Image 1 (spheres, rainbow, N blue to C red):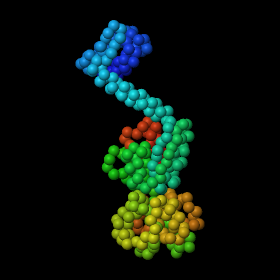
Image 2: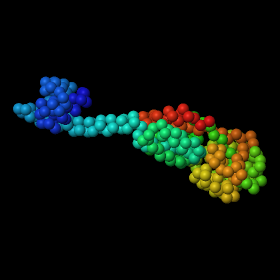
Image 3: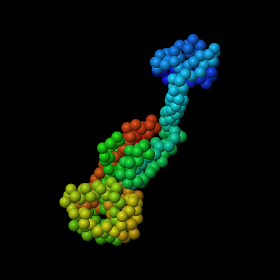
Image 4: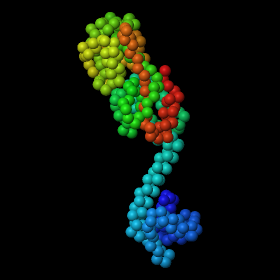
Length: 294
C-alpha cells in the first residue's frame, strides 16, 4: 500500500469525484482511477461506491478514511519535525551535574549556538542520577555527568576527566598544605553533597577502596550543589569535597583544594545521549565529542 495512494483516496472523498481530485493532484483521471484500483487490490476491498461522477466511501472505505486522516496528519507532523531538525531550530534541553554544569558546559552550548542561528538551549543543573533520568525519559536530549550510567538505552562516552579535592577555608590549619592524611581527614567536620550526587559516590568509593573508614566522618551539613558546599566551607561550617572544576571559580585566597595522601580521587566525565536523538541533538552530541574537556 502506497501512502501517496492513500492521500489520493482522501482527496477523492474531499472533492466528491475522481476527476476533480485528479485535477487537484495534477493527474489524469485514468491515472487516478488506476491508482485507486491498485489500492483496492492491495487491501482486498472495494473502497469507493460510484454513482455517475460522484463517489462515496464503502464500509471498508470509511475504515480507511479514519486511518488516512490519522496517518497523513502524523506524516505531516513528522515532516515538520524533520524540517525543524534539519534547520537546527528550536530548543535543546541539556542536563548536567554540578561540576560540568557550572564550568565548561555553558561555554560549550554558547559555542554550539554561534554555529546555528535560531537554536536555543536550556541547561538544567542537577545531581548525576537526575541527569541520567532526564536523558532516559526523553526530557533532555543529552547530559553531562561524573557518574557512569546504568544499563539501558543510553549511549555514553568519556568526554574528559575531573579530580575531587578537599576544600578548606583560609585560616584553617590545613590551608597551606597540599595534602591531608586519612587520619587527619577523619578528624574534620564535613559539608556533604546530598545522596544522588556523583561526586559524593566517587569519594565514598575511593575511600572504601583505600581502606579509609570514611563512613564514620562527622557531617555538619548536607547541600544540593557544589556551590553550596563552597559557600558553607567559606562560612566556616566545615570542609568538603568538590570538583576541582567547581573550585576553580572560587578565589584562591579564600579557599584551597587539598588531595588526600595515598587516595587519588579522579573520575571520568561522561556525555550521555539517547540512541534515538533528533538531528539537532545529534549535531550537538557530535560537536561536544569534538570538543572534549581535558
